[in-house]
Image 1 (tube, rainbow, N blue to C red):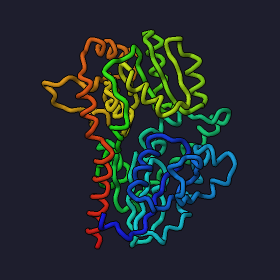
Image 2: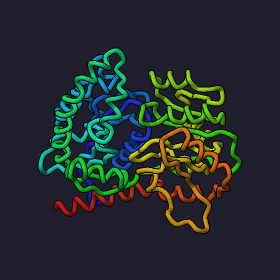
Image 3: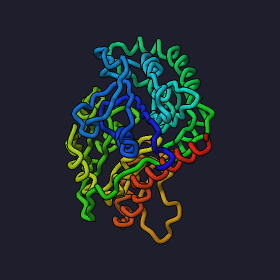
Image 4: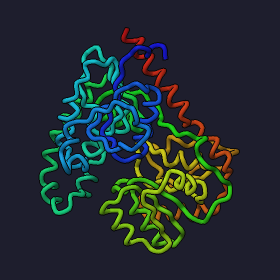
Length: 379
């Protein structure tokens, strides 16, 4: 990292609340740049040892009760929050963004690299889905009335803010296509990572299917619950999101479906390793869940669209499958694929070996090489 020596670096992210995959990407960026300062709208990981000794700057939203805990309610404030950060002292700024953190303002001589998980979903690709599945309780009718005008203005603001980024890095080719469609900006694809060797693996599988994520609408927990309520096969679901949707789905689940809330990382890895298959039903920009499954020697049953198709070996004439796809986001389509899956044989070692294509070492090398190459170009 010769080109990066003596460079003052800041890392900016939308928020640091829960600990999921976007935060894991943030952690690896921090491992590359351990002396970097962190800027974010709100920070609620004070007990996380990964942030011990880090210089963390939060926005004014951190001091506003309720809004500092519920990021959806602060949608109109986050643009102002990120524009308020003074980043004048930094040579390089790296934003890790799926929302408004890319809205920062930098000096002309400061290079802004945005690692983009997706152009803001509720402004662009999934606007209509979000507006029909609001989570403001009794305020939903009022929010639904105000949202079109509000999002219209924020969408224009987001487009302008995207052009403050010097170099976009996309987490998949699907995301790169969205960046170009919505922002008219080119991007470099660098896939996120997993630490393959950290995962437990087993070729002896238990008789259950597995899914883990946040219980928000587009993650399609309801689709899986409906499918397994119909097929009566064993299912384990894990989340750290205790919200209205989680409670609703847990209540409607039949006894063959078990839910776990806020379990440890070690327990999660054991569930990955022993599952018959991991399910992946959303239309996702990039998902680390299937990669973690493969690192655990576990095959994946996924919705056959978008990023999921990027991680499949297209020509495998002499190899067993690593994934199977269902073609429609319906319980019937998923259940038909599960029936087909149970007739197949899998080479679990091949599945794990393929996961090394997404190991953290590859991510770090590609990210550093890209940043250094642009530094040379700018000099």
